[in-house]
Length: 131
Image (cartoon, rainbow, N blue to C red; front, side):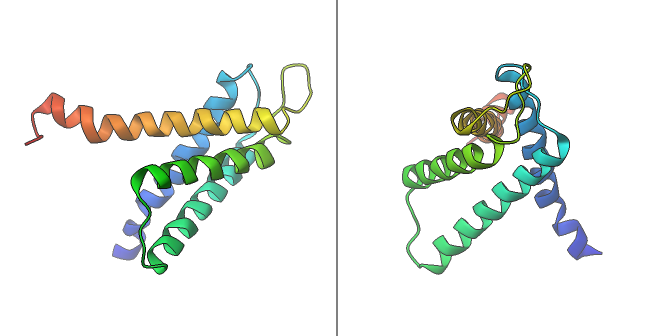
């Protein structure tokens, strides 16, 4: 039972990423992204992020924060352009294309970055937990 509870943060982050990808698609030109494609995109992002962390640790040399951020953003841009570009539908019925899929991926990454920044910096400052 304890092992299943350990997977809850992973499942939560996967669902959050799919939800935010769908929200980002809606923000960008009122496009539509199906739940199925949003969940597959979230799964792909989680898999690539996990594989990247595994390779980073396996290599013995840990990448710096800025390099890791840049590499992660580049991979998400490429994945979003490839996967979301052919699956997000504009209001006129056309597909978004590689560039638009990349924009949705960057919007999603930005929302997740803002949530992480809020959780790591602003919330502890508001509650006086930071020392």
